[in-house]
Amino acid sequence: MNRSPWLLLITVVLLQGGVFNRIHWMGLINPMIYVMALVWLPLGWNLALQMLVAFGIGWWVDSSLQSGAIHAMVSTLVIYLRSYWIRLTVSPVTLQDHPDPDLRDLEFRSLLSYAGGLIFIHHAALYLLESLRMANLGYALLKAFASSILVFGLLWSILQWTNPTKSAR
Amino acid sequence: MGALAIWLFRYRFFLWLIFLESIGAWITFSEQAYHRSRLNQWQIETAGSYQSMIHRATRFWRMDDENLRLNQELALLRQLLSDSLVIADSLQKTQAIETWSDTTWRVDLIRSARVLYAGTNAQHNYLLLDKGSMDGIQPRMAVVQGRKIVGQVQAVSPRFARVIPLINTKLRTSALHTASQTTGSLVWTGGPTRYAELMDFPIHIPIKVGDSLVSSTYSSVYPPGLRLGRIDRIETVPGAITYKIRVMLSVDYHRLDHVQVMRPMFQKEREELLPDQN
Image 1 (cartoon, rainbow over the protein chains, first blue to last red):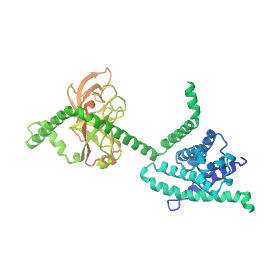
Image 2: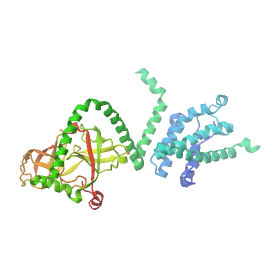
Image 3: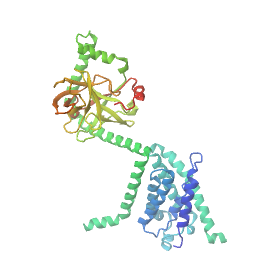
Image 4: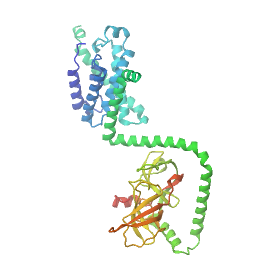
């Protein structure tokens, strides 16, 4: 695993606080791009450390949004689920060759189900926790879906841009 | 011990998750007013549903006592009705009728409710009723049993209401000594649930055991004239300017089953001018 998550982590957290927290398109799209850093965190790290880092990232975002520790809770949950989620969404052959696969090496379908799924879980859990009403489930899922599309699109663009093999083609 | 260590090691990440989530939840619920209020509502709903279930299960066995109490209440109501139809011949009756006919103290909402839970063992006791905001119940409404004061509504959810009874150390109720028309503060200081203390009652006012205490006009929550209790014991402390008075409360909180919730007319208008009144 040669990738370093720190640059992306710092960039997205700063962008989240400075730009993306202010985006509320049509009351539906409020993208949480810092989730990209969570997805990007190396799986090789100790899970307890990953969860602690996720909690810290989430709390940082919470402090800029004054939202208690909702983002911290959701980020920790996403990181915990990630270790199980990857086994469901990425083919066992890939995982056997690369137990900690780089997102750039994943096929689009695996990337969509793995990263896209995690992004959606994050947004859905976040909006549900934010409203704390089961009556708002439909709206929360719709909002999560709309925001997830945007964040996944952004993540995919970054992967395309930073993938040396694909850029060379 | 070894098995416990293995179990802890096996689920260490899950336990770590629970730990971090608990910290997050604690921060969120202590910082966010909206989340705190949702949690509060959820607690009331859960406690209400649970107590409702228990109540349904035990109601059958309590039917005899309940029928007896209802019959007594029916008899009392009939008596009150007949009293109000004839010309009052005693000062006490006249006062009672006038109190209720006073426009300022008409009540604009009365709901009957069942007591699902009555806590009596703590310092901060509370009751849970099976009626909530869907039935028009709101915080700061008076809760009575007949003409006896039970407490006041503290918080509501759509289907349930939480009540602070007189036997809660946080509650201070203005009490009128009917014989001398002097007011004091009724406070429960813990201990037996049948007794409270009347505070701030000046020592120069004549008072005797058995005198009754009712709600005063100072309260915006309770209509005046509702029974709070009777003086049970009077002590004088050398050098003190007030009595030490023990009051036997009218309501037996161990036998509460049905109550009425009411709101005096113009309560809001009054509280806007005097927001700190009890």
